[in-house]
Image 1 (tube, rainbow, N blue to C red):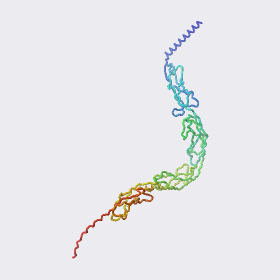
Image 2: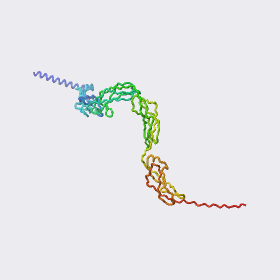
Image 3: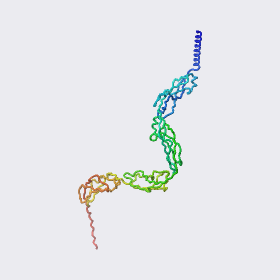
Image 4: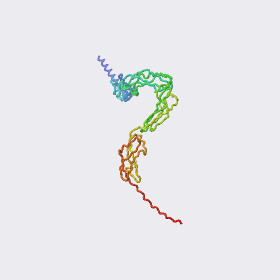
Length: 420
């Protein structure tokens, strides 16, 4: 029994010596070294109904991340390592909607020890995924050629499923598509892509629609109809200040048209400019250009007469008017003080705006007066429709003097010569 123990002790001692010798030789011939390896990071434990979104825009994004691993191990062994020899993960078992700081866990071969990671954690923004249903609306764009009419549009689906971050999905109010009718001469049967939109029609990015496309059918048939439509002058701008548009007359007031589809029942003329006008005008203008419409006759000229009338806007005008004497007896001279009156006239703006020199006359009656100084009323004469509001009782001081009479000149005497 004691011999067995001795053999066992000897065997253990020999094994220890062999391991020690192997370790010494290994570290001597293959010493430890350090190295860096860039390894991809995988997400682990992301709960159902939670997705990763961009930290700034909130849009869903595919997760990609790497971390730089600083490793240490036998020099010859770690030189042969690649990123595939390491497994780096971000644990999201406790991830919640909002910003999360998630540590990175990395492991690799037993002989390679991971000393550090850069980054050692990730900052991720998570959002709750929402699925809802919205209506589908398909509209048409453009028109078929002349003599073709469009029937009722039929779409294959009425609702679409919207999936994405809760914040974005709640903005979506519908899915819209558009089919082009431009130049089509036969029935349309196609599919059109859909896009999610919010109120107002602005597209919402970052969500997915199911279905992504919808089938559309639009019947198009050849058809020409004759209609009688009203002609309406297209008046643009405003007359000059103080004037307004009066009576309007035009000819013809209705015409016949041929069209591939019903129009509104009216057709406008070419624009007629009224800016700055002060007098009535008469214009000969054509009709506006409409696609798929032929007029009878082919060329239509519309005679348009537009009345421009002054606006009776009350207004006041200050005016300086000279005072003139009347009825002065011969041999007398009169001087008025002041020689001109500052008057304020009241009346319609257009009448005041068109006053001419001589329309307002101020006179003082000197009939029967001799030399002296008098304070006399002034008579104001003005066109009908105007009124003097100031001064209320105009008067002037008039000085009358006699005109000096020139003295008679002496006549030279002519000598008379006797006739023999």
